[in-house]
Image (cartoon, rainbow, N blue to C red; front, side, top):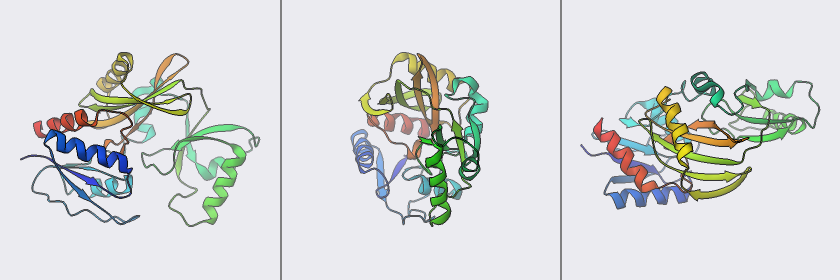
Length: 262
């Protein structure tokens, strides 16, 4: 039975939706669009009598994964995609391997100088907020605003805290069954800089780590060059990740082939 790609058309970057839809059409792969209600666990009306693979917002993909209604549905494992999971597997190959896991609130209560800076990111692959560098004063203000306002992000959100480091280049790679399908450069010196292609050394680095351990059969790895050395920045669920300048047609063909071969 042939795979159908189910693509969320709201709450997702419209350019990525268009790229994915066109790629499915160009490769002759079945696809369908759906929408969901924001901040709900509403499941899409997609048939379960054939393999289905989803692409959409993190909240929607999490609900689909939890439902276990579709196969493969979403390539995800909550434990593996936590920072602690891939830190244990890859160790010093991770940028800021000495990072600490705490919460926004706990960090804000410490006695640091206001100007001291930290890099913060969610501990889970939740996209609860974008990883960024903040000084301690900004962190305290942020925490107070989370305590006072009604929002999804809470002060007790687990976070990864690290010393900021310089990064020359960043790439996004889509890994399927241990092999890099496609990827893209997306940032230079902390500024958006998107162009296609990934150097062979970056591909080899990613595939070497995937040979040791991988969180899921299909996943996304972001790789950085810092101080002349390659490191993993983070891993992400493929089903919610932006494409930048990756070859989406190749990605659709490779993922479809992998799923149907299973």
